[in-house]
Amino acid sequence: MVNATTPLLLMTRVPPGRSVVTFSILARLAAILWGANYDSTTALYLMPRFGICTTMFGPFYPDFGPFTPVFCCAIGALVSWTRRKVLQGEIAALPLYICFIMQVGAAIVVNAIQSAYGVFYDIAFGAFWIAVAISRPRKRAVPAGA
Image (spheres, rainbow, N blue to C red):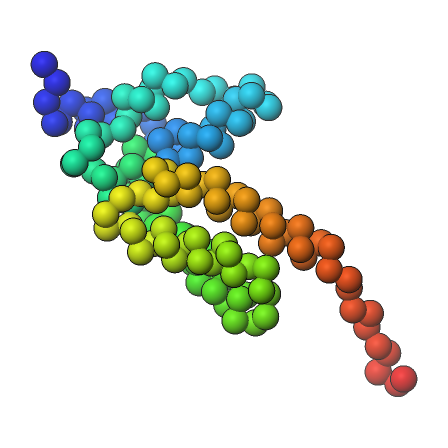
């Protein structure tokens, strides 16, 4: 019989920092491309029961362990940096910023990065922003004496 504390006991057996719960698609991609170690059964048993840890912060503990608050601060810094870029006129960053706001807004209810295909949206909108930035013509510097 499995009770509510079993997933927490299983989480202590796998070292944190592998990101196989929240960012499983990236771990799978690394396993395919570079042969990184990925065990899908470990990822399956790391996830706590739904109803206990369904917020955004629940799945971060198996991924990052005691560094979960640091990772949450890094997410906040990334959202703030993206907001600043949008306010400075980087309109291509607006879809990514809107996606971040929706994910952070839903954090107290559900992990929108994991369950609402959020990681796919983040990658797609980030790639869109990079593609627009690369394709944008560069301004040439005008000499000071000219």
